[in-house]
Image (cartoon, rainbow, N blue to C red; front, side, top):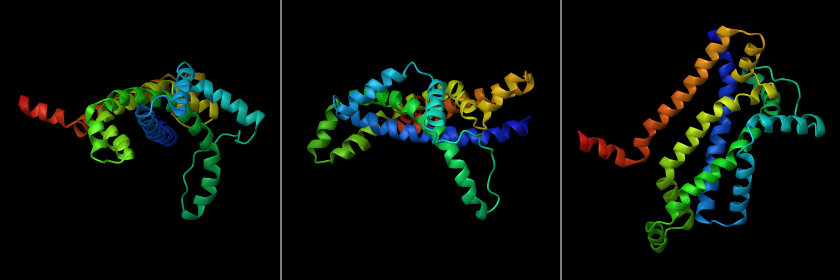
Length: 241
């Protein structure tokens, strides 16, 4: 059972890890941009999409994507991807040709499902930060606007932004794993669905332990990273000692 779960973890890590990194970077970029310039067309579009998608689970978008891109506009492969890794460099080309068409649609679905909500929340966090006087002082000293927005603004809002992104990722694991069986992606979500269908109780319990462990590990890394982003935490701990 451990070997089966370990093999299913690799496709899940590829899909969810890639989607999480991309949506975190893009959402932070959009959130800081919209927070520095509220009321623009991009800001209004991001807010509207976040409101619409707030009540739509990722697996609902996955079913819509399957209907659209498998049947109405058949540009995505409808057959399941068989998990393999290239054994030699010569096999890398055929492996990539088989992998990326199956990977692209579930990857884009996960990114699209969460990027707008996260960007809108980062925008609300950074909006308060950009109203502080030291941003005006930085502009008065001649600091370029891009550095004011992304370097200074990102540094000030990074603890709250990371809390939002990491907490959202941990909370979305349970619903996000339902995307895998819809796209026939060979990860732990599909494995859990198969175990449920065949009433394989030991495998279901093992998968629940793994998913819960990922959730708790994400929150632990989040707590440990606070000291790296906010020096006041280190100073406060030393003062108490």
